[in-house]
Image (cartoon, rainbow, N blue to C red; front, side):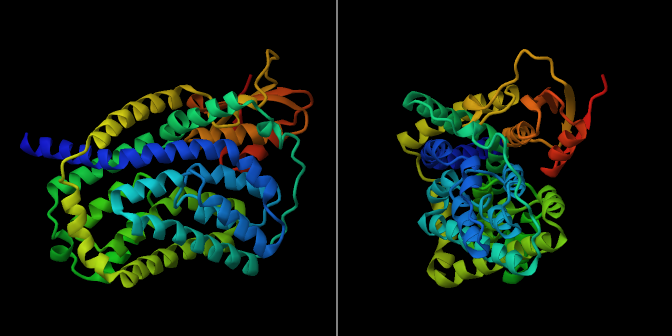
Length: 423
């Protein structure tokens, strides 16, 4: 019972220390979702080999998209004429960080981590994108987007404010709620049941620890925000801040599912460069963090451990209660809604017209996935309306003269697996 109470207290402290920064980060992300939508990003990517890579990276760093949500957006970029280099840069830089995770990193790991993290995302994104641009032949042909502007119709200030708040405190928290709670639980378990000298006692070697963090980070799914408490937990086990940083880069930047999709939409050469960039970028970032701030490396663990046991302020406690309510409500809503993003309010909806076809869509795991499928279907010739039901893994399509095989190919091009339902 004592251990259970200690575990719950550790989880509460981690949540409380993150919550004020996480709340502010969600709010800023909501504003960005109205100002900078993925469709807007598509239209503003340049065609130059170098400039498109830099633009894709700069657009990607602040966007609050996880390694799951970034895949359909990147696939959509590719379908709309983005080069392999620009798509790769977006894939590498975007899931590593976002406005919400930057502020949460500041609150839990300190300003040095918070500044170093987006800088690493920027550098690795540019390096990986340029690597693909100069080594992998690109034969992409831009297609005409029949519904490219459907999500960018002008709205009133009240509608924009409503959309921003909905994204900030319903959509975005709903996407990361499960992963964030799991990350906090892992941090609590390690804090409660694993001694601080675990790494030095059972591993010992600094370089082996770096590789271990990489081996854990690359194949597993973890979003940029939920990776923060896990990285903190690793530091409590005795790993250096640089080793924890390796996990902060490699964990969100890729996972087994993302690798398979990248292989499919960009080809084996680009996928290999994508993996190598994450691999070496994580290690170089970790070594650089420890090298450039050696004092932090030596004193960081003890400072963080002490901070995790200080008495919580009223702001932290109140923010934690608020965050629990937001996460619970948003997760519930995310399971009920069909699609949910800043452009939903202005996207064409399914009319009373009977759908010409129904398709099963396997591989969708979040509302970003569902929205990407919906927008791609709306661009098909003859389609007048589309409805994607995430909970049922289903897409309903209405229109005239719609080629069913084209619908299936379009959905599959995003990295999912579509089949037509039989009447």
